[in-house]
Amino acid sequence: MRIFVILMLIAIIASLASALVFVYRDRGQDKTRAVKALTLRVGLSLVLFVLLMAAYRFGWIGERL
Image 1: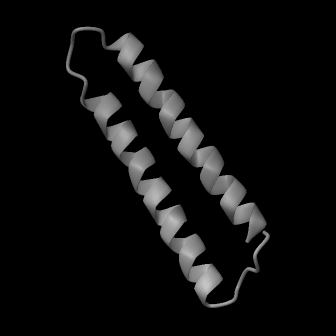
Image 2: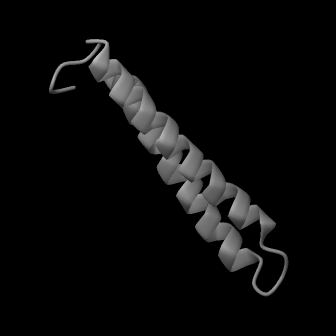
Image 3: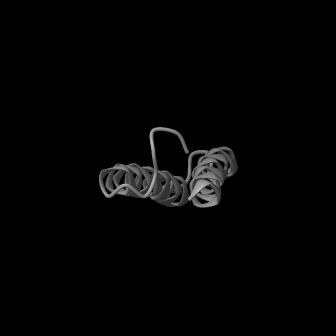
Protein backbone atom coordinates (compact mmCIF):
# COMPACT_ATOMS: atom_id res chain seq x y z
CA MET A 1 0.00 0.00 0.00
CA ARG A 2 2.87 2.35 0.82
CA ILE A 3 4.41 1.92 -2.63
CA PHE A 4 1.06 2.62 -4.29
CA VAL A 5 0.64 5.85 -2.33
CA ILE A 6 4.17 6.97 -3.20
CA LEU A 7 3.60 6.21 -6.89
CA MET A 8 0.35 8.16 -6.86
CA LEU A 9 2.08 11.15 -5.23
CA ILE A 10 4.82 11.02 -7.86
CA ALA A 11 2.17 10.93 -10.61
CA ILE A 12 0.42 13.94 -9.05
CA ILE A 13 3.66 15.92 -8.90
CA ALA A 14 4.56 14.92 -12.48
CA SER A 15 1.17 16.11 -13.70
CA LEU A 16 1.64 19.42 -11.90
CA ALA A 17 5.11 19.83 -13.42
CA SER A 18 3.85 19.06 -16.92
CA ALA A 19 1.11 21.67 -16.51
CA LEU A 20 3.76 24.22 -15.56
CA VAL A 21 5.78 23.35 -18.66
CA PHE A 22 2.67 23.63 -20.85
CA VAL A 23 1.83 27.05 -19.40
CA TYR A 24 5.28 28.38 -20.27
CA ARG A 25 5.44 26.80 -23.73
CA ASP A 26 1.93 27.81 -24.82
CA ARG A 27 2.14 31.49 -23.87
CA GLY A 28 -0.87 33.34 -25.23
CA GLN A 29 -2.02 30.35 -27.23
CA ASP A 30 -4.55 27.65 -26.53
CA LYS A 31 -4.02 26.43 -22.97
CA THR A 32 -5.99 23.20 -23.19
CA ARG A 33 -2.92 21.04 -22.51
CA ALA A 34 -2.28 22.80 -19.20
CA VAL A 35 -5.94 22.53 -18.23
CA LYS A 36 -5.99 18.81 -19.04
CA ALA A 37 -2.84 18.23 -16.97
CA LEU A 38 -4.32 20.11 -14.01
CA THR A 39 -7.59 18.22 -14.37
CA LEU A 40 -5.63 14.96 -14.29
CA ARG A 41 -3.86 16.13 -11.13
CA VAL A 42 -7.12 16.91 -9.38
CA GLY A 43 -8.56 13.56 -10.46
CA LEU A 44 -5.53 11.66 -9.20
CA SER A 45 -5.67 13.53 -5.90
CA LEU A 46 -9.33 12.71 -5.42
CA VAL A 47 -8.80 9.04 -6.29
CA LEU A 48 -5.90 8.82 -3.84
CA PHE A 49 -7.94 10.47 -1.08
CA VAL A 50 -10.94 8.17 -1.61
CA LEU A 51 -8.76 5.06 -1.76
CA LEU A 52 -6.95 6.02 1.45
CA MET A 53 -10.25 6.64 3.22
CA ALA A 54 -11.65 3.30 2.00
CA ALA A 55 -8.46 1.45 2.94
CA TYR A 56 -8.59 2.88 6.45
CA ARG A 57 -12.29 2.06 6.77
CA PHE A 58 -11.82 -1.55 5.68
CA GLY A 59 -8.77 -2.01 7.90
CA TRP A 60 -6.26 -2.44 5.09
CA ILE A 61 -4.08 0.22 6.67
CA GLY A 62 -3.67 1.28 10.27
CA GLU A 63 -3.19 4.74 11.63
CA ARG A 64 0.25 4.82 10.05
CA LEU A 65 1.20 3.73 6.57
